[in-house]
Length: 116
Ligand SMILES: [Zn+2]
Image (cartoon, rainbow, N blue to C red; front, side, top):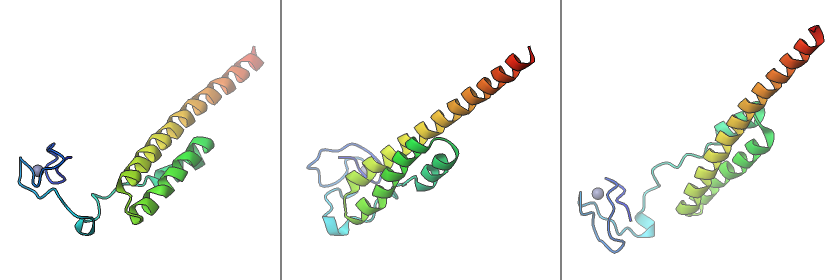
């Protein structure tokens, strides 16, 4: 496991961090709410509107899971969803840009072809 204070890797059974001495064996009830897990919801919605609808919707679905998983205590799951939301929103963004460029090039081609 990794120390949540300094990030050093420790043995899974270690009671405290070798590097900084932070207590590692925390019971479920005193685990403070995680280092804020970003849910990427705002980005997901923006890319859905402006870039790429299908990928954006995938990002929104994952983004929406983040908070509910945090509330359910599923931190691992929340982090996984957060990662997926990030990946999908970047894909949506990238694909959106590519489509814009392709569309621009296509329009230019049509315009050029028309004037020849
Ligand atoms: Zn540490």
